[in-house]
View 1 (spheres, rainbow, N blue to C red):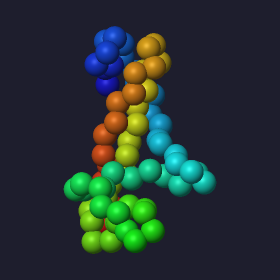
View 2: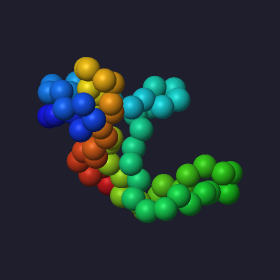
View 3: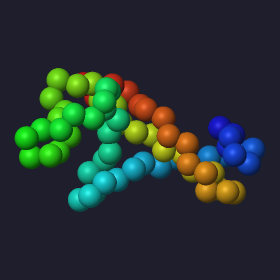
Length: 69
């Protein structure tokens, strides 16, 4: 892949880790809160977030991976 910011090639694959080292997910649709203020996730499609960083300028590209359910 080529960096969209600086044009350098060879982006480095990585991932986003949230609090407590849990992998972050993309969730379809607008944010809806549950009764304790967290994100309401049940019944919503989610995907793993794939992250690629440019070795030259540090620009980060995010993509979604396979459907998690």
